[in-house]
Image (cartoon, rainbow, N blue to C red; front, side, top):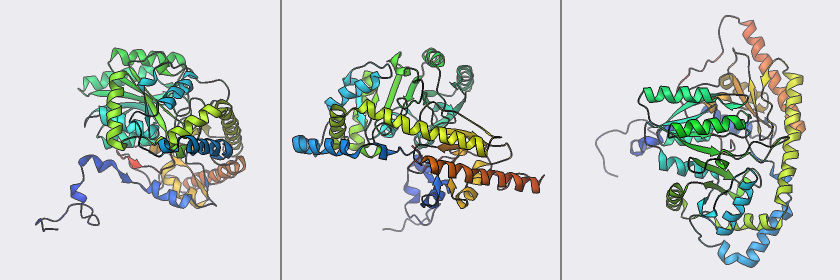
Length: 439
């Protein structure tokens, strides 16, 4: 390697530091991520990661589908496939989406390597440096990492117990236009939101779609949890009433298993064509094997009955978590989701969820601090608690340990009243690279 005559700038442990593209600047690990290596120890109760409870899926259903695929279509399953996805699976995806009011054509479905891959492809197609992406505040952490990797600015729109607030969306759009900023799209998780757990009402869905039409803003509807309702089902998808202005993302990770890495996008025709090209450029073709196994599973198994089984598992765990919060932390407030994986806890104002996390891990409980879900340093008072993976007993133990941490922090602050928060976090624009199980 020749001597360029100048020293590399930045991280001297990486001789290629100054060769990276500028857009990689947001791909930095955080101290939060580092803590998850400790939190993965078996004695730590993790209420952090959104990992589905795949043990509720009977193994013989999947093994049977794999066996039949290999016996009958092995040569196809082990070969390259279409950049758009297996046609039979795309037809079956229409049946899945029909449960949420969506009708469409299999020609407009693009199969991807998980829905997060679809999110990355969409962002690659639409985001130029300096563009604005509107998103709920809080919003899904890895979506923000992706948007930042393409050098977009995330503008958070407030939400309440009924989801994103339409009037706030109008105000944000008006302000951004007045500033001369370019809004590319609205990213939303309307059903059983990650991380807040709330669901956007039907009336607001319609109003938000009208606002988007009036302002020529595309809507990216991310819907991993929509079929995992506990009582009343979620309202129909936004895509059910708007086909040209909405790109819909779905996945089998939550209703079957994330290890298959199969998701999809349903997009207007022109966008679909570009998604296929981007998909081929990124992975050539999604896994034929995974697609054919899922297609066989959907053909042979009672997949809707299995989703109902998952609903029962997650309903029990959510109820356990809320009961434990009521017992151990009755003075705090939290959301009561009607589906999905998450509860959004609000701490007393003087506590800092990010600063408190190392102490929680020391007490053998882990959570995701609210700061991970804001691009602007917000969320200091919030914690995302995940109830999908730990057993009910582990959830109770975890909440009890969390209460010990919170009450201990409050006692400590009372003891040193007037000194301010311990280890304060200064708000700043950071985009941590999240743990791999946050989805």
